[in-house]
Structure formats: structure tokens, C-alpha cells
Image (cartoon, rainbow, N blue to C red; front, side, top):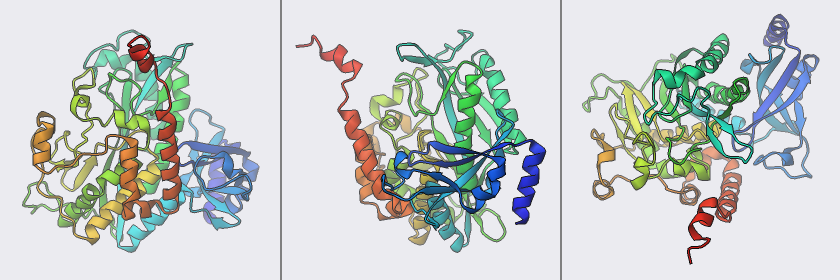
Length: 452
């Protein structure tokens, strides 16, 4: 009750008149219902009602009872671009019971299991995204108002980034006003591509923030006549967008990290527990890929072979090898510092709640079964041929959504991390690929119309 009254006073101080009760569908897309602030108590005790069958992947049909989104008071987030409105992340309930098809509820379930084993899962995610414009005929191109963002290697370039500084600074001020701790922004490797980095938090808070970040970029970008897209690979000749995951486990009592060990004989400063965790991630990597790269488009970012050069800059910066190494961006997992890992394969197009639930479950399985990751790869994986990589025993990530889904079907740990969502996810993604495969693309018309 005290927290309820504290938030009520804060909303009055912030001038909040409306509340968004927000959850996500199976894709990670934000869904909301807007209510006046006078309905605050109702949103806590009962929740905002939704027709579940109107939302992808929440396990309901048109006959189902109302799905209610009950707000989480700890997620109070005023909208910087709409100061009279606040958003609360919400959990789904049906007939008074927690709804297991809710991705946020599912992540809380998995994190609860991690806490029972004495740990916290701390995560930072780096949301790469593009600003684009769209022509009347539907074609897109990088947002480039000064016509300066044309370099083959635009990463960190001042003149390429300068037109976007107003957008990036407004976004940074907005997020820092919410206490997120934004510590750097930059122009990424593709024309029109940017990244904003903010402090790590508990996995649930980070997933909530990534969802809100996508909401914020979509609205703030409009002020600059741009569309913000978190699509994994909007341009075939440009680097794709990742949602790189930085992570470690911490002691559940003290909050101290448990992945660091200065006596590490491998020289990476990591503990045995840390190696077992990444051993689990690598062991389940092919099934994890279905959740961390869940769209057809994601696999145009993860391509091997010629795909390594399917970028104007010369690199995709997206390792598809199931490997780990030192501070080396050609590995799936790089050791960014003692006890600090980064997975570079996770797609901007993932549902962060599902991705993090699956990820930590894979890592905890590694701890439970003492899975060894082997010795780190220290060389440039991009310079090795596929034959050399195969000879070394290094596996690769799935190269298509159906391949990843097939791996997911057979992985009890990753499916278990998704709970009842797993079957719905597999069915939906299978149908998604079938729909894609049935399309006739412009490339096919150009290639085959008068070919025979």
C-alpha cells in the first residue's frame, strides 16, 4: 500500500493524467491500453482488459475469458515525449490467475528458479537500430537529410553522425531523465544505423527497458521525419542490427559478481562457474538461436560464407560460429573483461523476455551439468575457411528459421524455459516461414521472368 501511495504522489508531481498498461505479444511488440489516472487502483487490483485472441501468441481464442494486464508499480515510466502520460509494464492474468503465456510472467518464473539457486542474472543489452525513410512505393532507404551519410565505413564518423545528433541527444536526455545511465551513443557500421548503451540491470528490468526503448525510438524519430526500425537486416548490403547481450551472474545475497576469478589459468579472468555457464549456452546455442533470432529476416544477418562480406563495410560483425574467445568480436561470445561476457549473435528482432529466459536457462543447465566450453578461440574466425572451422569441431548457428525451429523442438532445456509458450512459438514461427516461402519476390521476377 505504501508503494501505491508513493507512486500516486509521484504521478501527481509529474503531472500524469493518463496511464498506459503495457505488455508484449509473443514477438515482443508492445501492446497497450490507455486509461485515465483515476483508474490507477483498478490497474493494480484488476487490470486493463484485453481480447486475447486479437494478440499474437497469448494462447487465447475468441471464446476465451478476458485477459487482464495488471501493472507493475516498480516499472513506472513517464513518457518523455508525452509528459502527461506514464507507462507501466504489466503481467497478464485470466480469471484471477497468472497467465503462463505472458512473456514477462514467464521470464519472472525462470528468474525465480535462478534465485532459488542463489543467483541473480544481470544483463545489459545494446539496441542497434536504423533510422530510415520510406517512399510512396514502399521502398526504404537510410535516413540521410544532409546527404552526408554515404561512407562505405561510416562507423563512428562525425559527418555521418552529425545530422542524427539532435535525435540521439533527445533520446539520451529522455532516458537519463528516467535514471537509465546512458553512457555512450554512436553511429554504427551501416548507413543510418545507431546504438545507445545504458547501464545493466536485473534481466527483468532490462527487458522492460528494451521494450520501452523501442517505444521511445518509434515516437522520437518521427519528430525528425524518420522511421526507427529494429528489424534485423533492412538492407541486404548493410550490416544488420543486433541486440548484443552483456551478462553475468551475481550472488543472490550480496549482489557481488560470481563470474570473475583472477587466478583463471586461461588468462580471461573468469571463474569455473562462468565457464560452465557459457558451456551451457554453447551447448544449447543452436536451439537458443530460434529464440534469439526469431524471424526469417534474422538469418540474413547470421549468414556464413559469402555472407561474411555481405556488407558495404566488409564485415557483418555477426559471428555465426558457436565459439567463445577473449576480447574478440569474431566469436559468438567474447570476454569483454574479467567475468564479463558479451553474446554478439542476438538479433534486434527478438522478444527480450523470451530471449533472456531461454538464455539464462541454457547457462544454468551448463552449471548444473558442469558443461565445459573448451579452450577459447583467440584468432580471427573470419579468416578461417568453413572447412578449417569444421575440422576444428566448431559448430555453426542455424542458417534459416526452419533449421533453428527444428533444433528448438528437440531441446528440452530451451523449450522448458519458454514453458507453455514453446508450442505456440514453434507453431507460429513455422507458419511464419511457410508464409514467407510462398511469396514471389521482385528478385525472382527479375531473375526468371524472361530467363527461359
